[in-house]
Image (cartoon, rainbow, N blue to C red; front, side, top):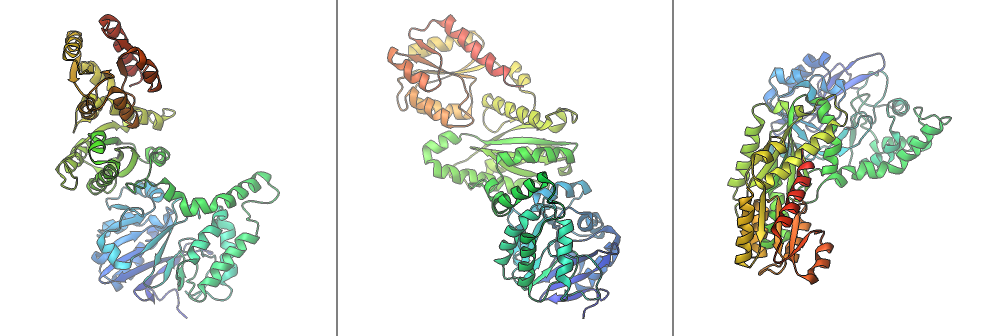
Length: 558
């Protein structure tokens, strides 16, 4: 029989129990260490009030400099409150967590990198244990995760399989099942998720279960897994009494959705090209970010010239370029930053205050890393729109939506700034300082010159092209405020050009005017072009429409 007072104890090959403390008459806390090949990972580093004894137990096994990671299976203080003390003692490594837990861990003001379980493991951690992480949302915390060490067959189960009460032995006995089910009945309000979680756990080769509370399940772990599943499937959770119809409804919803939420919720939110979370996830994540950060910046990074790149090399090669773009950005960003994919060639970067320094300097360095990379088949650049979260008062209702609107509007301003640029000022400030821009696409040099001279006289910045393919390349790099195009063009006609622009998320909203023939009106309307001018063009009328379209665009930018 192993006494709880005889810490640390080796419980499996390279796996150690660091001791526990009774925080009340009914609950004890367990902390674990994997130490293998001269490197260690602490599972659930524990509360502040037992940090000294935890650190002493670690040092009996390994020097602190060998500890490469602390795994926080959820946000609770009995797991996370000691994190600042680990850093003060000299810990230098990663803090492993689910992103939902990371939101709260950031409140401790840590300088250690927060490693999201969706990111690739560093080589040292991967070689150490080949840990596998299983996301188990709302059991009992939204960011709860299980850690599985396949080398020893140990499942570190966080609150799952925990129990109330004091025992003299560290190892679960025959009566542990009843304590375990009582604990889950009281502390797992989202028990509807459990069947799917336990089915997933059943697929692992589990030799022992190490919960954060209670005893280690060394004998017949499968029996305990099945017993807990049977208990949940057959019992009524006290948190959802049968005499409350509303609670019955939520319990039914939980059971109906548990498999999708537990087994595939993260996967469905991930972008298949980059492996990053999608824009919908970002929009749900942003309010939590704002709650936990009084300062910080949001940035949209857009690869320049991707439309022309896709036309030259194909969309499959374009996806590879975007994947490379995301990988370089992931490697370049500060550890505390968050990266998402918006759509098309656009990524979203969130920089919290804890990143330190000038956020513009960080963004410029990331831009330079893209430009200097040799991993693309041709040199690529990216531009960035930036908004400081302090630009919208925290008391404002709908603050997150207002910030998203600002950053998207500044993305439009990049259209007139050229490649490798940054816009971090209100859109109207930039637009008032710069002349509006027009692109004229006409194979007839006389007509093109006439229009160019007219709009130059009206203080427009004018660019001209004589064929559609050249125009597409220029539009992709230097987004004009408005496009005036002939339909009949060499290389790529006006209809095909317009179709190409409509396929591009970041180009489709540029106002477009056709110089038409009579038979082209229906084609233009089909492509969303509402204004068509027959040659020879009445210039004052054309100018009035151009001013109106640009003014409408400015009214949508703030």
